[in-house]
Picture 1 (cartoon, rainbow, N blue to C red):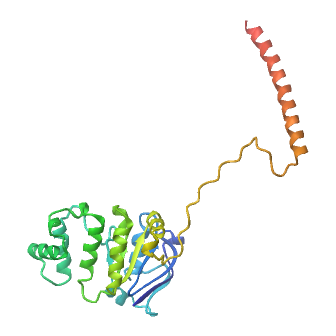
Picture 2 (picture 1 turned 45 degrees about the vertical axis):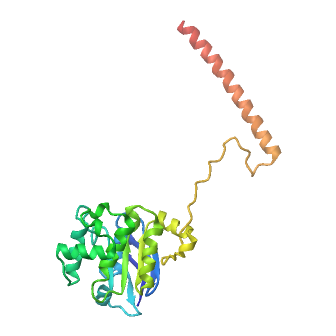
Length: 262
């Protein structure tokens, strides 16, 4: 499966999502850069076929089929859309997802499922307190329980903290298992991933722009490069003369005024 976003945007003038093109496919993991509070979720919704873009189109293996895209791609942990409430216990989150997957969904089933995954001790912990990498592992494992899932769009795992290499390695494992993986992240996480060369992280939405520090302001007393030495010297002499004349005039005025006050 190959999912391609062809110059998609959302909102008037691209305010919700500026023009974006990217591609992710079976057996590989890619990341895409999306900043601000809403854009990661908007991009995730469009990439998983759950929102129609304002401009552009989304194709699956070269054809436009949003219904198939929705069935094939799971939208994981998107803020305000598919992220579980922070206060719900992990067992509660698992139980709900097991129900959607059409398998046993009792608290016992949930605890057993977590135990098989190696997280049995976290069953009673609110998911908001679960380690970021463990959270990604659990939510992605739950996503692929649904029949027909071929890909995952994981939204903003960096917002939970932790080192990017933790959830990136997990996403890579799912790609190795044959899933198409797209991870939507912010600029800081993107820069961190690109600096970790061993992770071989590929940006699906284009290169990350390097951070640029503002140049120091020019020294007003510095010699202008356009001035010749003779011109600069003459300018400095004229300025000094004018300043001295103005100072003498001010002194005289001040003396007269001060004397009148006394």
